Image 1 (cartoon, rainbow, N blue to C red):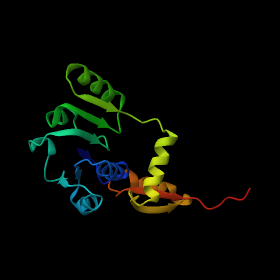
Image 2 (tube, rainbow, N blue to C red):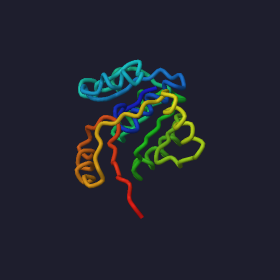
Image 3 (cartoon, rainbow, N blue to C red):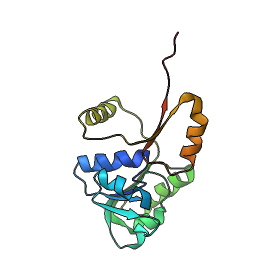
Image 4 (cartoon, rainbow, N blue to C red):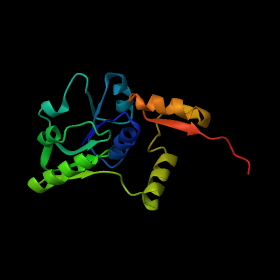
Amino acid sequence: MLIYGASGSVGTYAVQLAKYFGAEVTGVCSSSNIELVKSLGADKVIDYTKEDFSKNSEIYDVIFDAVGKSSISDCMESLQKEGVYLQAVATPATSLRMQWTSITNSRTLIGGTAVPKTENLNILKKLVETGNIKPVVDRTYPIEKIIEAHRYVDKGHKKGNVVITVDHIER
């Protein structure tokens, strides 16, 4: 399995979940995040600033784009004939492209926002509580600095998650 954006908020969980369920994981991230992604359990890490994974002739059963920055056509070249391409951030145009590609070949393409289910959240909660999954927090901001937090996130270089803290509000 290849995870593009393996050092972001979604990607850090994806690496850990894939490893928990027994997948061999290749993470794609920048040079500064290689050690983080390895520490999360990735078997191999590709630095996208130095190597284009779609040109290295590796073939994957699953490609998960956690940040919406991979090219669908490039990914199809790196995906098994019966493989699955997942995209966490799918624009309407990307969704249409994914539907068309699914119709014209044997690969499965899935994109968009998942519907939260209590049972899945309970599984994640248990995995965190047992230490099988570790949340990655880059920075914490108080609610009063939420604009600053958004500016930091919008730069696109955070590692894991940015947390907003809210003090107890008296009613």
